[in-house]
Length: 376
Image 1: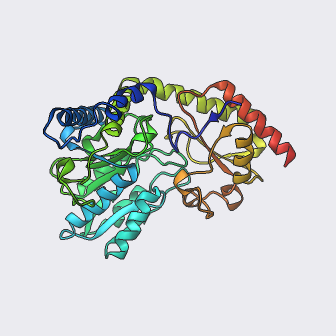
Image 2 (image 1 turned 90 degrees about the vertical axis):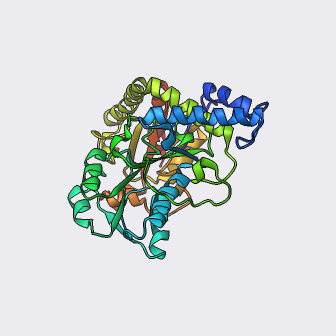
Image 3 (image 1 turned 135 degrees about the vertical axis):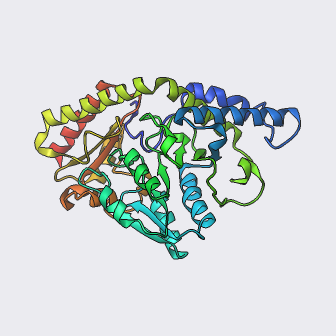
């Protein structure tokens, strides 16, 4: 039985082109990038090439890209690093109620350290309340962090308007773009800091990147050596960095085709559900400003965990929300924030498509869903 993978928001398969680019740095080009001899200098050149590739995707200067170990580390560095470095200017940070745990848990830690955090509401589609955002701004506000696109329901936030509000009040704006990178075109001209992760865009796990606009001071949170312009200590994961660079290069070339392909798959899936089991489904989130491959559907009267296990038995991989919170039995904080009724929260299945998925796989998926519904 071949596996059908519909959980690309959790992680993606490494592209063969990415792996081929990485292989020399896992074998013969093993030098430490800080070394002065030739194989060290080769590793350093590879890192700088990757830096240019990442920068090109989001339209910034290469010297504004810092490599990290994950999207979560990028988020931690942006929030903690900026808060620690600028606490003389203020102690207030604004975020939203539907952020990824990498943001929410970091904010909780900062609260324990004396920082004040405001959590902004969202509407039933997951769109941030811009009026509330502006009202929450204080003389002590130093940072606004709102995700580019939500990892559970795929809602794309009004980033341009958020950045305008932040900059009107001379506040730095950070966005967690882990889900958005490679799935929507991004230009950081009005963004001050941006987090991303390699494994969401067909690069390996264990590598991320953080964009920090030149002139912004961020205290490093990992101490040791002076790598990454003294912003992130630790010997560089050269192969991983090469991988994320190549993945960004590929995405930069193919993003329009990629978006159209994912939209076709996602729309086909939802249309089929609406045709075959309309009385059973509830779409969570908006269909207007949404990541192209994301569908978050509640199936009335069902238990998401049971469905996931049953689907796995027939070779289908889906999730009930964020993979980072899969062990948490509490209701989804995202679905709760957008006002999904209790009877629908625990029946929500997140299906996220990738470029290798097919309409035939979707047909098989829906066929099995209908079969399970008859038995349960």
